[in-house]
Length: 195
Image (cartoon, rainbow, N blue to C red; front, top):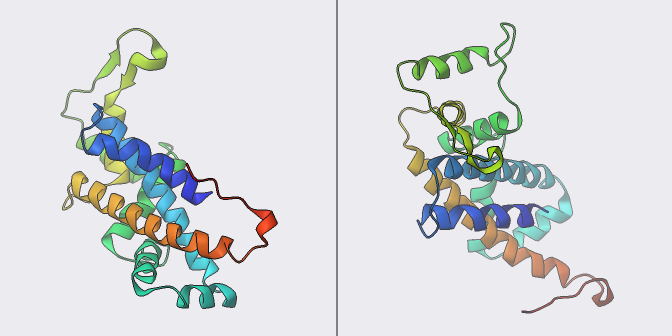
């Protein structure tokens, strides 16, 4: 499931970042937040699964480069304190849980600070026809960036590059271990379809 999800996000995100597909900045930010969320969940899953002896044995038997890719992905999990892990965790938390304005809300001050940071900028709401594909409150995108990637010392482009690098690490790991695992199963339980 994680491989399918991340491949889909990657298929949408990479062509935009490489400017092969024309896109708005907010599309890249949304997809980066989505990719970061998937990476966090994958890292959390792998970290928790590593407690299982059979999983430990399986990982230990991998080639060094695949184990290194595995370790890079795991380094984004909930126990990691690297700057990127914190960014990914924050992006995931703010992607799936909207920050509330009510005074007793846990993240109210963070939202308040993000809104205040844009108080002197011109907010924009685009309403260019069909609301399903031509409406966008771009001021909210600015707030989403502040909430998801608030580190003033890090450029968003740098975070996007690191996220895509970690997507690559996960794909390296997944495409190596999937056939190893499947080949251990009875042959009448799976089918490989080669295009």
